[in-house]
Image (cartoon, rainbow, N blue to C red):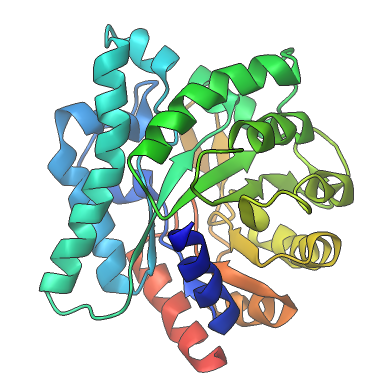
Length: 307
């Protein structure tokens, strides 16, 4: 797996900068994301807006763009009258749009290597009711694997550099995802959403991370869409338990109100925190919801001095 070797080498050589939140960048450009497909709706309706969002992050200093496929599922698209063939085309397009943004960035003078991570959100993201912050959907590991595998196959076929198994709230769902990525020929990272020293579903992080320790396809483990304050402890546990590079991209610190479909509270995210995360062992660092290009530029600036 060539991309595995290349990205793994980059992680070993120094910190790699992830992008920030796709939805907040699209909303800041005036796009309404209030329906259940969230940013995935624009794959069909305004693909150029997604490319522009990726480009903003590349120009801000991100090395990796995470695609707009987080909430893109066959089931979710079917609910909007989109058939499986067209849904597969839209999943593939999510990778192609990020690649196009990388080409545009390099045409504008960005000379560093740029990567594309295909986002694979949890089952709860498809439900669009905040379940990704709870887990425990009442499905078996086998049922969750059957849900994830078809779109993983499509995304892997689009040849991203890495699959981002992200915002996973439950160690059982992680087990399903780890089964589903086997044999796809594309490396992946596994990223939990956490609260304190446990997954959102309440499992100890040591047990949750341990599942990925011996999975060849997994090149990094970590956390995302958690508060910045939850990152430090998770980095130490992930590194100790798996020995793999650690990925971290917390949200701004605000809280998501699923009923109101809005963020509430104040931001507690500061780019300067990343130097401590890097010192603890994080190798792939960025932001999630409500973290925009300005913050990513700050992260890139801090990490360029950490080395």
